[in-house]
Amino acid sequence: MSDEDRIFLSPEEALDAIRSDFNLYPPQTRLFLELGPLILGKRFSLVEDARNKGVWMSTPGRRPVHRMRKISPEALGNLLCRTLYTSCPSSADLAEICARVFETPARPGQNSGGQNGIWIHTGMENFKCGQCGRCCSQLDYHDTLSEADYRLWQEKGRNDILQWIGTTRKNGQVISRNIWMVPGTRNYTDTCPWLRKNKKSHSCECLIHDVKPEICRQYPGTRKHARMTGCPAVETLQGAAESSTFF
Ligand code: SF4
Ligand code: SF4
Image (cartoon, rainbow, N blue to C red; front, side, top):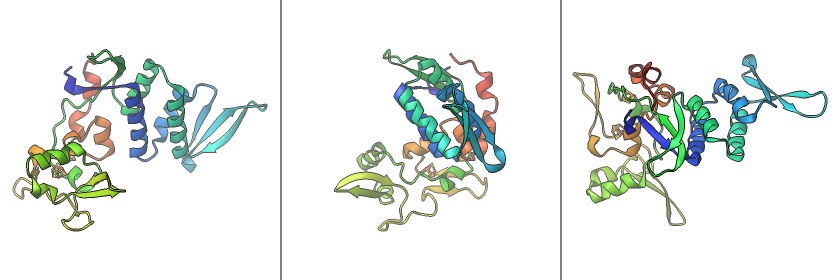
């Protein structure tokens, strides 16, 4: 497997990635129920209340031994996150949690610099973008422009691109760069100004493909990301992770 098909995360980066995953998508009740025993330990038990879209959680305490209380999936996700950050799980446990969260093989290991962390298989080696343009027109990526993208366009003198960028400042400091904004306004465009549809082939193309933002270059980062955000090309990946050898 090439390094392009796997990513290395330090334990801190792995925790941040798990938290981002929990925040990025609607509450993943089934996943949270699976992770409960791994993160909270066996002293707690969790039972899904599918009819009321909730979860019952038993907490250890005085007799009666277990008292059940209802917890929303959002609150359960927050509890799991808080517990993860304070409990410092072992590398093996963190790898298992990553494997379940990102739905892909994950192993503890070291990077080339000898740092301990988690290797995560992206499962993206067979991905073939269908150029449908859905991600360009429907995903919320407005405040994700990196400073590196901005600097690159400045260095290349790409004022045609820079004019579509908004900058948010607080006390004179740049807080975020925002794409794509109608020049001279604080209004976002309806869709990316660089997206063009080829009427003959019905496929879409990016007019700034060579210098498109990092967020566009990286999408979708994993099979789960593709599936959860509705990328139709996720079908090109089915079975890829299961059939490949990890390490
Ligand atoms: S949604 Fe998926 S298939 Fe469509 S353009 Fe984006 S990456 Fe390609
Ligand atoms: S810059 Fe290119 S890849 Fe990014 S949203 Fe626009 S058209 Fe899509």
